[in-house]
Length: 121
Image 1 (tube, helix red, strand yellow):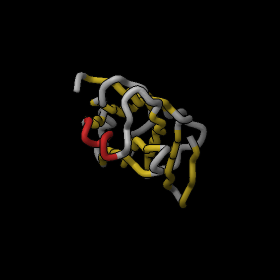
Image 2: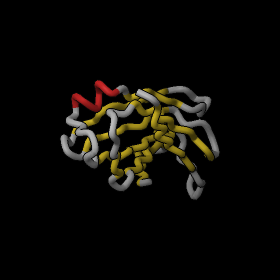
Image 3: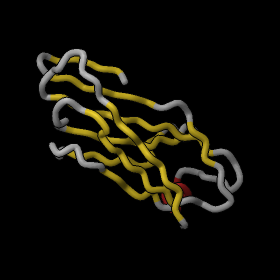
Image 4: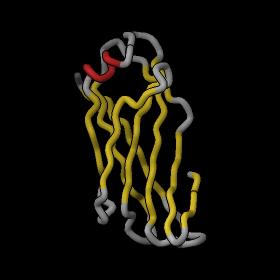
């Protein structure tokens, strides 16, 4: 993840490599962001799923919760249809994770998991 500092706060931002989705049905996907390790609560977190072909966000989920509890959202087949998903063809997406830190804590470790779970449409 990249970190940009602004005074005593900062923004962390991480992007995945391109991921390819291939399916014989238009999928329904559950996207979940979980904070695995953080030295303190994070003021704002979000996760974005972006279509490479369309260069647009398919969906995103954000929270301002200070509890660092998981956040998740369903991506329904209609969303994939809107973004040109074709059955049996590779469909490329990227994931972006972001977090705001109110207090700068140098040399601390932060870990996040983003899980994409393919569900029955």
